[in-house]
Image (cartoon, rainbow, N blue to C red; front, side, top):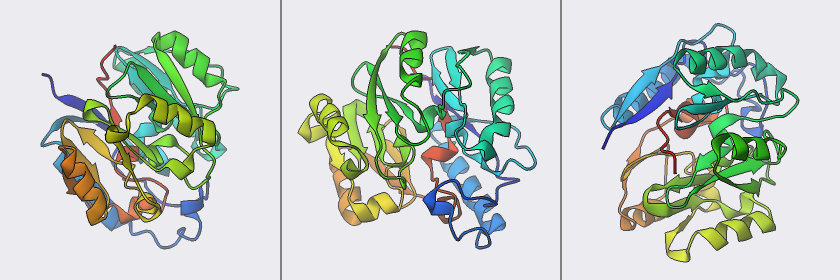
Length: 273
């Protein structure tokens, strides 16, 4: 089986210069750029033991390019590049679109009036033939039928209701063999029903408020390995009972911008169902 390929972008220009989510507030002057670089390299080096890491060039004055999960979403040889809701991130778009085009992906020409923020809000289930696709804060539901048609796959729409969890990958993590690690209070009633109707109880790994606040759901899963900022003993035990090995990698400086391990990565070889 081929190794996962993961896109990352070095944090050469990473700062917290603006506030576009609740986690950023108050951190404009508290970020340690040097510590952020060390943490990013630790994550990259650990992931590289299990996956092939591809890097793209960072750009001056675009501090959030480090969060490549928001470059777009990939499915087979197709990609949908992001159109950011916050104006501060829109200058990233041509760089991500160019990267996808230069690397041979067929791009969807998504209407620029529609907000869509990539693999932050579009996650392939690891057990069933569908994509979980979020809306409510950064991605608009009008993007969902476009994604469904372009990728020719089922899309399950789930709505976020807590602005601390502004992308689904901050509170929702599909895992190998159809497991799901998620924080139910981040979603509305109908979305929780949609999740529970597709994921059987023994496959649901419920994340409590404290773990969710440490971005435990914003994890990278490669096979039976889970890479995570921080998790309680109870959550680590639940993951280990499900057959996963947990790697804790401190990413404190990226949490100040509202991101963690998953936000810093984009899987490039998603299999087509």
